[in-house]
Structures are given as C-alpha cells and as structure tokens.
Length: 240
Image 1 (tube, rainbow, N blue to C red):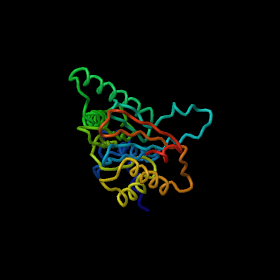
Image 2 (cartoon, rainbow, N blue to C red):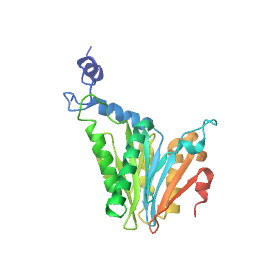
Image 3 (cartoon, rainbow, N blue to C red):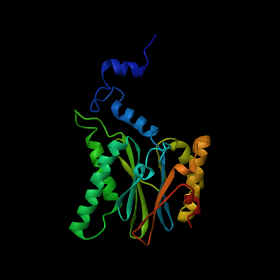
Image 4 (cartoon, rainbow, N blue to C red):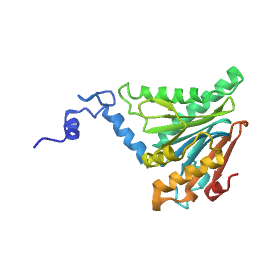
C-alpha cells in the first residue's frame, strides 16, 4: 500500500524547516502555520462609505480574566487599527513594531503614516521568517484598517508575507463561511452602521450555536475623523 504523501514528507524531512521546499514546491512549515491561523478567533474588516471598522470575536469566556486585557483589536495610531488570528504572542511582536513605525513616521514627516506602509512592514518581517533557517514562521495573520485621505483602507497579510487590499475580509476560525456571506451582502455604499449589521450577521451565520454577541468587540474610524471608537458586547447592536 502506498504511503500517504504527508507521511512521505515527514519521513524525508521536508517539514523540518521553513526553508526546505517539498518536491511539489510547498513550504510545509508555512502551510502548517496557515492551519494555526484558522484555529484563531475570527475577525471581520470592512470598508464603508463613511469609514472603516474591524469586528473581532475575543473568544474569552473565563470570568477570572479582566475583559479589557483580552483585546483583539489593537491601536496602531489614532487613524489605524489592527486585528490578528493565530498565535497572539507572535502577533504582539508585529503589533509593537507597527506602533513604533507609526510614531517614527509621525516624528520624521509630521504627518500620519499610510495604512499600506504598516501592512507592508509587517508582511516584510513575516516573509523573512519563511526564508532564513533557525526560525519558524510567524503563526499569525494580520488585518489592518485605517483612514487615508478621508477614505477607509483595509489590508490583510498572510503567513507567507503576501498582502492584499480588500473591500471586506475575514480571518481566523470559520473565515470561509464568513466571506461567503460578505460576498453576498457587501456593497460599497454601506454605512458603518449597516456594515456592522452585515458583519454581525455573517459572524452569527458562521458560528451558529457558538455565536455570542457578548464576546464581540469593534473598533471603527469615521473617514472625516482621526479617532478610534471602541464598543463591546450588546452595545455594538446600538451603534448609530
């Protein structure tokens, strides 16, 4: 009986380092890291006619944990936020670097940094860890949302160090199911309020019985303001 190809790769050592290609042209450690991302809690980002937002599932139900310490949406600057899926400790290193880059840009050029420069720096760091030996890939996908020229921008970087701009996107657990709803319901003229309703609906449909609005948090930025608004739990449904 022929041995499954995954077992063949393991026996031949193609999955022992992120820098070794398999005969099929895959970096197996990178693909394993992508599976880690899909085990992470879900986040949805959306560009709306009047701004941009990220809705995240904190997936924290331990009453002993202080809720504010388990944030899933991070402030990069007062016009940029980010969310992650995968290994949170890996993400913290990337978020810290992004925050420093934003402040360096503000001090150097006296103007707010563009959201694409943030995601590009994160993607460059992640790419390096798929190319050099002695280190594993970052096991995290990063979603960055921000305002540029009073318009919302949304980017996502994967494990490999690629990044793309999106109108709407989802990362983490059930991302495929969430994106199916977004493809059906998303329209470019959605306001933040209507977009949040679509995102909550997509999350609810994907999670089914596991859906709990109390676990959700959102950060949104209106296009004409450099101010991050945060809302958690049932208050998300009351955003006007």
